[in-house]
Image 1 (tube, helix red, strand yellow):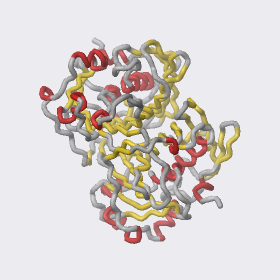
Image 2 (cartoon, helix red, strand yellow):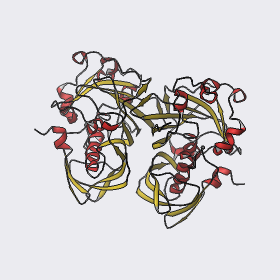
Image 3 (cartoon, chains in turn yellow, green):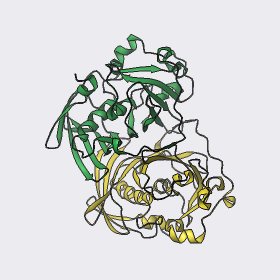
Image 4 (cartoon, each protein chain N blue to C red):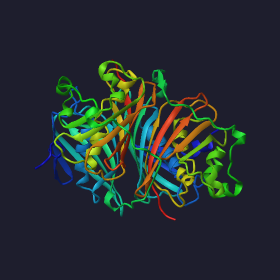
Length: 264
Length: 264
């Protein structure tokens, strides 16, 4: 039984070039598929040429919008070391490069289990007490058919037209078909929430220029908690930081993106 | 009058390939030059093929150690758009790639001047009340001949063998020859402090795997304040976040790196 996420991020690799079909139901309301979904697709293809199994640091530059339909992903192994494979991929559609990805792959299972952290897991209300998007919204934001998001009501004011003004959003996350998370799921999850800028009262489009994700540990089965925050909206740009915590209270991913605020 | 920093990051560009001389006095105690210095060198060369003047988002993967001496930097303009040029560079020495850089260049002077921020500028003691490395240390860490660092004594316990255990370091920064900061200076400054892990009691070597810098505004003349912090040391890796504030209390750069803890 193949999961929806595995099917939507699958590709066929021949001589280092992957061909894939970008699915049409992983959108956020506009014509372009979700950036995290695309990052998972590209990184999963790139992982197939890597000597190490797990993405540990992944940077994507979003050059042009991608669209549902056929895509070609070229891959390059830059260096294959003892503990890390460095590699690069480019996603093309209609002969134009849409996304470039630079990544380091390692083996998360082989890492020592020392932890010295001052990071505190977020406290959210129970899943059933959180905000689930209404069906009308799910029809628009099609990725919600695959990602089960339950947003802490204290950070969902924007959805009722009353943003809190604080630059934070917290949500439960799991794949809707029950598939347990793997590292590529985290690449999708860091970008699956609505732009945290909405909770600061920003409206309109917030396209991602650059997104970097560090996967710090293999996620345990169960719900993930996703915390998105922004501190500095300036010069028409903002950063969005995301942390993902797993069911064992471990910080499994950290990401930051630089986005541009466009309109309204 | 050319500054030390300009001289050390200069290159000659012919047909998209830059040749440079990696200087031998920008080290941190080991044989390899400082990673931020190298990033500034590569990015400055890459900026010469870009249609836009300022690095806005720069990611470096450190593949192999570099060394003082001749280097070749290949460049590629990936896409030249209206507001952003996306470009890539590789630094080679002895035929081996040492660093790969993926960057977006824009025009920081053309950005709107809206600011909506919850980020607070750090409060440091006066420059003259901060900790300056003794001459014995400066002879070892040669970059201190070019970077005037004055560390908040509350975050310099490691230097006296008594780390605070908190993962934070705060410092004043300016180029020692009085040259005012530009965007490439910020790429150096985000990596010029000692590893913040030292203040958590970690000893040994903390090589950077990946470093991403967002330059958010042109820095005003004067001293910069650099705040480095880490929250999560786990699985033998840690992230190091750096913010740089200018003399006008603006957040001019944000960076994050993923580093491996080796030894002691």
